[in-house]
Image (cartoon, rainbow, N blue to C red; front, top):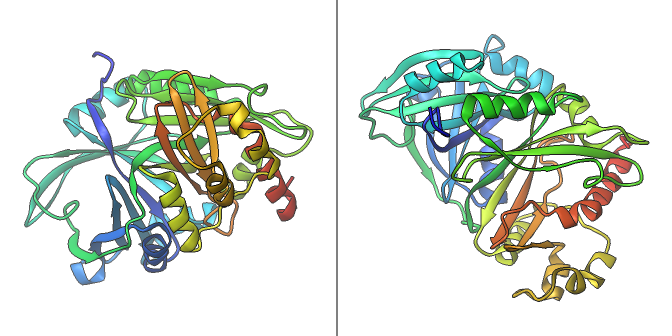
Length: 362
């Protein structure tokens, strides 16, 4: 089958099931700079759910709200709060991808079928992954519409913040399940272990976690998978699992072309970010060497920097975007480095623990 058995091309979109998609769309437009591009709802003849499509660069989000208690999203929101339901894949042939995935051990969620409207058709199927999350498998036949069949064009321009695409998507799973799901992505999707971290890499005085990063061969689709590790107190992964009600997507990393410009704009838009202790910046130059950006500007915005043998990266993490301490976002710029900021883990996790303590969850 080769190293890409599903003939995966890219992440097509990420779908969130939310309590109020209209308000969530407003938040992502005005907070993160996404533009609304398409809509599906009562006005288009869809009676069960309403969806808004938001786009920035090559990153596509779908925000869906159920219109009645019988819709499966209603129970999903009751259990998890707002969260990611679907990490959808664009594949060469949805029928073949579904057949191969289920033969390799994936549990089918939706058998292959046509989705059609006046703009043409796509082929659609879906498989289960960790928790209640799915991977849709989408291949195009003759479709020429605004997003997918059933959607109509509904443009509302956002103030672009410089986000280019999704860099990686992180899943949190229960203790003892990380290896299972790493094997799932290896066997089903042909992904390889790109890098792994253990509790010696990601730990503080109080808590720890372990992580395996799974990647496709092109390194354009990267899925870190975290599980908690034993610690003196509750880790951020434990807090997530309790708050979300099980495994799910912890954060989405958004790649940008100018970290300072993007983070500056998002900060002005009111997006709150985690802050590390100011002492982090006193030794930054010694740790990472020369960088193009001003240390003072990086310090003012709270941006983190890490270097490896290939270059360096800049990154920052938002506070949770829901009232439950679950989903958050990372803004990342890569200047050669293909890593994940290992040198920042300790400072970052200590800042996360300060927020956990404020919530009474450490």
